Image (cartoon, rainbow, N blue to C red):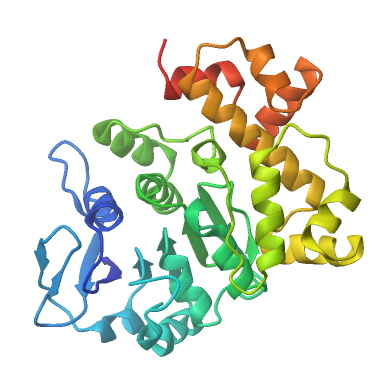
Length: 316
């Protein structure tokens, strides 16, 4: 009996995340037994146009979400303004029935909009961390992770993480050996050892309703090597230290000093990519007095060592 996988589509979608899932779950390899997934692309019967100009014509109406064994949402139209709220009832019905609910990239926003991620662990593309935290504070967000499981819900980071997610689903359904076979043919590692922290760009948050807080963040970003104290940060934001802690947690998910360390690491990432400066010198230039402290925090936040990060993003 086939396992029905519904993939809702919409105008303005990207092909990368959708294509990764379709290729991994739907491809027939002559030398391998079939995986048994029946993929049902669902959406407007008149078809949708992707952001690159390609056209997809779904064979199934959007109602196919409610009857699927697995629902894979590979994105929403706009995580800020249009989270495909028209899917909410169908997504809730599928989840209530016990379907496996899967998202790639901004697809997590469709689940959050439907109230399905409240109290659940989840992830999404690192670019939308702060939007998810502010719009849906009840979501237990792990932005570093590539794939996060919580019961019947499986969420992943964006872009190429769709392949990691698909291999994880195959592993769950068919075991390690089959998943490894598919991964080899897709030329991807069955288990990605790093997380998405190493891909995060310098973090300049724009808090639309808090100009003083945003200005404080910009001041810190312009001078990350300075030995900022919590009181100095509070003064910059024109709030008390207690209020500062509360707003940092709400806007970033971190304490003020932990956020500052992360900005230093991200500044170090930029220097590792753009310069040939010694690693110890980069640590000092970004506010770390001891090389050991720099390496410890770099691995904790980026998931790899400074040397390996440079090799990945700059080359030998």
